[in-house]
Length: 261
Image (cartoon, rainbow, N blue to C red; front, side, top):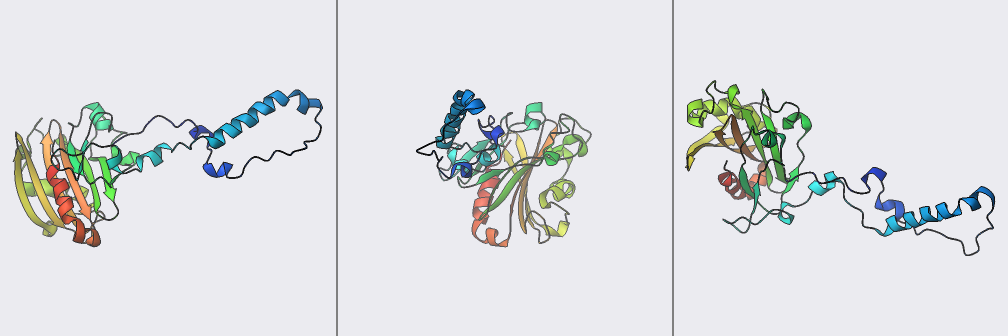
C-alpha cells in the first residue's frame, strides 16, 4: 500500500508551476501612489514578496503523484534476489491490517513497478472490521510486465469453522471455484484452470494456480496463490495480457512464489 504522506504545504493553494512561468514585471518608473493604495503599501509589498518566494520554491508533489513513483526508490532490496525489492505490509498500509483482520504479508517486486490506488469501494475501508465480501488490499503494476494484487476474503464466507486452515476449508478446486471471480475480475470457468499445486512454507499451506483466461478483465494470463490465516483467506494474483506474458512470465512467477503470510 506503501502510504499517503502528510498533506503537501501548498496543496490547499492549488498552485502549479505553470502559474509562475513568467517573471514578475516591475516597471522602472512606477507611477506615483496615493490614497488607500499608499496606506496599504506595506501589506502589498509583503504579498509580492510571498509570491516571489513561492515562485522559487520547489513544487511539492500531491499525495496522488507521490504514490506514482517506482518502488525501487523507497523499498529495500530483497535479501533473496538483489534484482528485486521487498514489500512487507504493515498496519499503516491498509484498513484491514490496522483492524487486525489480515496478518502481515510480503512479496518481491521489480524495482521499476509502481503502486496504484485501490478505490475506496474495493478497499474494505467502509466495512472494517466486519466485511462480508472480499476486498482488495494493495495493487502494483508495470505497463510492460503486468500487475499484482492482494485480495482478502472473510473466512466466514468460505467456512463456519473459526481460524480454519486452508486444508480445512476444502480442496484447491473448491477454493478457486469460490474465489475465481476475484482472480479474473469477472467470471470463472473451471476449463480455464491449467495447473494446481500445493506448497508448504513452515506451518502455512498455500494453494497455487495457473489460469488461462481469455475473457478476464485482469488479463488473459493469471497466476494465483492462496492461504488462510486467522479469520481471513489471502489471495495473491499476478496478471498479464498476451504481450506482457510473452516476456514477463518468469518475473511474474518469481513474484508469485515469493508471496507469503
